[in-house]
Picture 1 (spheres, rainbow, N blue to C red):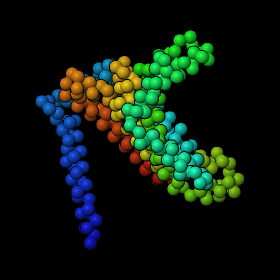
Picture 2: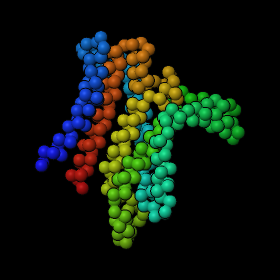
Picture 3: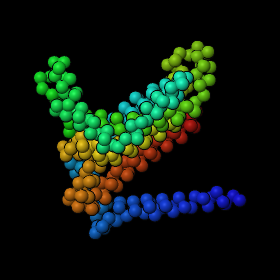
Picture 4: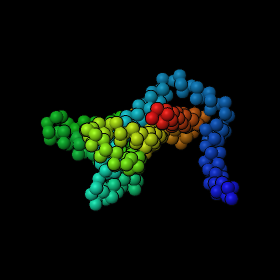
Length: 273
């Protein structure tokens, strides 16, 4: 009887193995008409080429900024929704995560309207007298950051919400009864107990921000390349499979490093608590 539940895992594992793991390994280490040695040689060259290092640093920097912003903005929203006693709490939660149902392209094109030279934000600055002409906001890191925050904020909200909802609200009342303020209750009880969900939210947002393609391509253009847009250029424009695989390998390592760091912090926090 104990073997039957394990047998149920076999179809999913087979699908993951042949549908994801093996194709990913081939793409990373043995792309078409390219030796594995060429991939690692190109990967080593990326670590010494100033142009590639600038792209790597820009990708990591934007990923960290977007992750911090989404967690900082998303956790208060999740906390208020999880602790709300309003009968409309479910509706507010649905509205918070509703953007996840829309296409990334649709949401990104909205920023083209807002940040364009004749967009609403630039015209507002002119009307307020801050600038004489609308500033160039498109094709900058700021545009990419804003687009990615709007893209992944709902994901941070739903991840933090699931963590906060599992923290018994009675602990808040007990802490308040013992003289703790609202801020002390939040920082010393709710946030520590919600740390696993916060770490998951940060990991998911960083992984999505560093590997997203549509938003950096539309809002950053060719002047603000990230690893994802550089990968597309290697694979579809110059057809340099060694460079494309090396870039994909770098993106994969970045995601694995952050995921491992998140797991390490979670384990240490569990041991400490």
